[in-house]
Image (tube, rainbow, N blue to C red; front, side, top):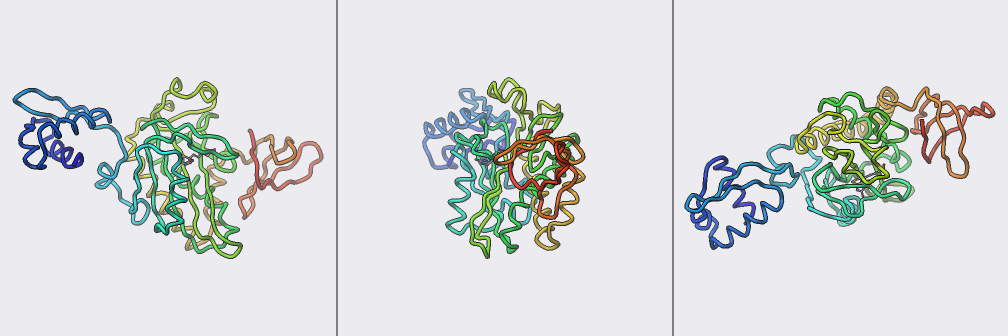
Length: 321
Ligand code: BTN
């Protein structure tokens, strides 16, 4: 019903529509129309109202609801099943639930706000209302489970390409998958897999991108390490950005499904800000300093240790530059 009222206002955007005509068209009372208008206003729609003239839609919020996205999406499969939840604990959690129920490949679960967003290494992920893109994509690849961790690297490559298309050219990838701008984190990627030793049942690729938050909007502990498109001086419409991002993810995913990961890993190297740098490795059990010399075919970072010259293969953990 609210969608019908919104459609009505949209058709007449800029001019007035009487409450009476909407109540007749939507077959509800004028009081019900008024209540729906109030709800739309609370979600950020700017709707003017004058007695005798009716309602006039002035401005729409930058929401990523299905109604807003249906005319914008240009992808083939990604986002064609689109689960929008205005507020949720974590889109990864919801996506896993849907994946268990058999939702098709390319399903996107997206929200305006996560109240328990999850990050890597059991950290949280700050996801304020309508200020970022917080979503998860369900994948059902036929490649073997050992390849699954490379999906995170694939996502990072696709995101860098999308960001360039959106006008942000200064982003780079910190191993394994943080997207950084001027030393601050713009994006987090959390990939989770379910399957057996032989086959992947599904992968949930969760992505969080800070779009319009200002530094003061971040919790204090993130103010010196986080960034957003807005902080970097790049204004984007979230809906347009989502389309570009899903399109780039879809293209990159198709590429790895048909050609394998090798060329994507080469692209990763081009966008990397970790390679050829001195790094501190926080590996399980020990921290050490070294020089990041390469990325191997499995997506592991190759580091030459400063203390003994030994070449280490970093499989898990974190590095700081
Ligand atoms: C990281 O720690 O860098 C990864 C953060 C991943 C955050 C995204 S936001 C959408 C999806 N849902 C979650 O709960 N986490 C991921």
